[in-house]
Image (cartoon, rainbow over all chains, first blue to last red; front, side):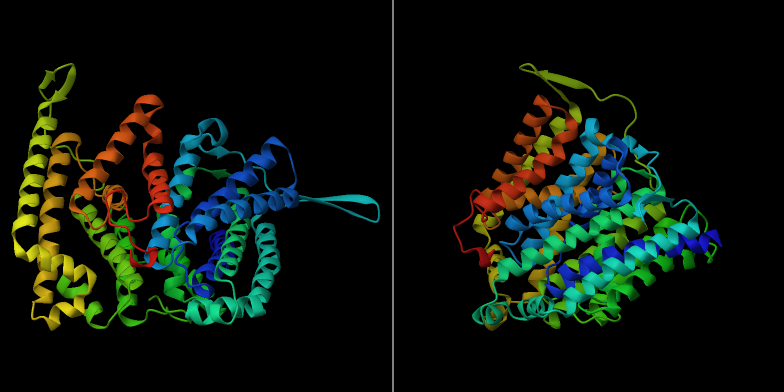
Length: 297
Length: 215
């Protein structure tokens, strides 16, 4: 049972990542390889803030969202001068820069040693003038927390998707010149989408940090960025069903492979081979992913 | 790889993003196949300590001198090859406008195969030299590729001297940073330089000035 709860919690965490990245890849058509950097910034800011300033869960998450949003904004400004291949290269560069900083600025992030002992979420609020405090400790409680946050943030994202903002993004994605001719500022829309996407990834980072209670930079590498992009490519992007399919597929696949009984020495490599083969096959057969709308061009 | 994956995709007029993802998938497959067959650890080729020579105050090991000489020979050979042989002009043309190449009667697909063969040979030599020096493990491919890509972009995508210049600039800056601060900031140099060049002079140091869209 704990195993299933763990998988459900990870799915819940990755759903926010996937839907926030969906805003950048699916709705804006920008293949961004630095989402794991924002995920990592969210995790680290949340951790440092809750451990050094002893803030409770909600203020810490809000601060990590703001920080990740600022970083996304600053990275978006130079990155959005380019489109297509070069944009991928620039975001890749920023991903590596942020990873290197997280890994090597040991006085701030403890680098490769990681930060252990992250406190589980303490949510305190006041009802009728008497303070209440919840500590989220057991797996069931964690699952409920993740579900609540999923509902909150995914609803926000869905509203953005359906709003004129989302539609404008899609029109810019499909034909930039035509949309600009109609008066939509490419830079502003894309920058907003990029910033919001990065900011929401921080929520997942914070959830991850307080769930595993230990973070280190090796969870936020280029490989993780590629994994998150693969979730969207496999499941589909640009709509609401796609990222869900992608997250379910990519998180359940390794668990399903576990039951094949591969010896431990070769299992991780075989898993990666299947993953790579899926990417190649996908480009041949269905560039829009299983349930998606946006096609990789 | 070319025949099985890239050419069919090309024939379907796939955009560059598709090639990027497909090549990433192939990279993951091959990297892990190698790891499956040979193991995930670092493998070294020679045991013991390399004899080292001291030239004007700089200490170099024998393998590093071999690396230098081999690289120099390859670069000079390639440079002469590029300047003299006509096939290379066709390759530049192919980079710009592949369809026009077929209109002029040149074998597009054979040239694509040639590109893959030549680049694989160069990469093979480079990895052999590195393996003899510091050893090899299956997972170094991506970071090496990234460093090389940065060197090419920094130096200038469309100028042969640019590639050499880019590698020099990158290596020099890395060494300076390592000397001044510590070795762990070396990757930072690579990518900060990349971003800096893309923002200030996107065609690279020795590239011809072009509009941003044509890069």
